[in-house]
Length: 282
Ligand SMILES: Cc1cc2nc3c(=O)[nH]c(=O)nc-3n(C[C@H](O)[C@H](O)[C@H](O)COP(=O)(O)OP(=O)(O)OC[C@H]3O[C@@H](n4cnc5c(N)ncnc54)[C@H](O)[C@@H]3O)c2cc1C
Image 1 (tube, rainbow, N blue to C red):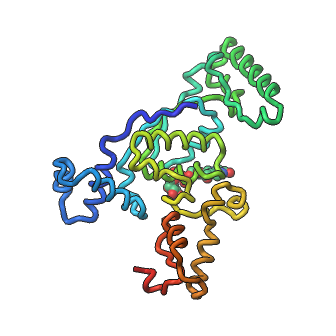
Image 2: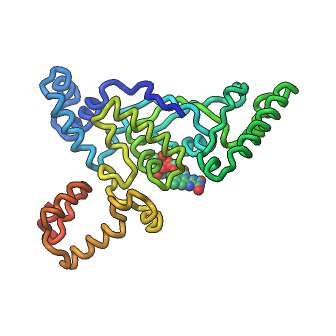
Image 3: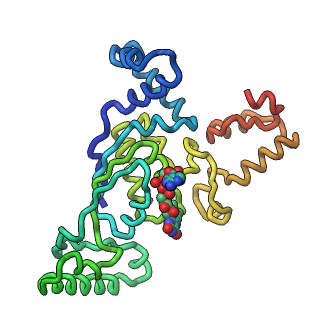
């Protein structure tokens, strides 16, 4: 599997700053952008302002930041899942009608579980046989669009995609979660690495939905949460709600420094356990 961040729309941080500032300031966009371009507003301030806004639910400005990725060597099992994302993303995928697979390009994706179960040889044998029949079919004049009917989910495929930041965060929410299938999880993790490497100021916000920069808790079923390694460090939604109920009943002790540190770690909204509701809402 290969993932490359081909490009991203120029000055993503400044685009986000301009979009958010336009919402929250009396200044016209021209003035906001004059401040950015003249350096009147320091880069550090731009970064800090955007980081604060990214903690909020105001996500539409994120649609103004766009990435292009090249994805290759992924299976058709993966590609079928990826193309289910339909908002804020655009795909171009290698055609099985125009591209006739040659031996070398039919490097089927092989899940590790086959080797772990001692079944690699059977898997390999079947793939070799499929390749043989596929190539025979092409030689017999069967068009590629019909020969492909025998190709399996393991068949490799390539994409160029364009995706905006709002959708990339949403894809991270779902596909970095351990409930997602291993191959698409690996793909999205690599996409995240690419964004972090190129634009660290915003890349770190791509997390599974339980991440401290996303929901901060798991909203999957309890069994999945218990089975997930991240469940050891991130709470389940039911626990958060239970803590809130206890707080409303006044059955929660005053916060200690340790609690405050935990709240900071989870970046939970101000659920100040033990503090009267009026104070907590400020
Ligand atoms: C763990 C897991 C298991 C899955 N299992 C299955 C399965 O068994 N069978 C199956 O068919 N699929 C399955 N899927 C795919 C899933 O149902 C979605 O199709 C896929 O995750 C795309 O996500 P999305 O619907 O949020 O679309 P996106 O395009 O990524 O959505 C972006 C955002 O826009 C919203 N949105 C998009 N379109 C509309 C609309 N028309 N109206 C209102 N809001 C909209 C979405 O809710 C979301 O908030 C699974 C996905 C995951 C992560």
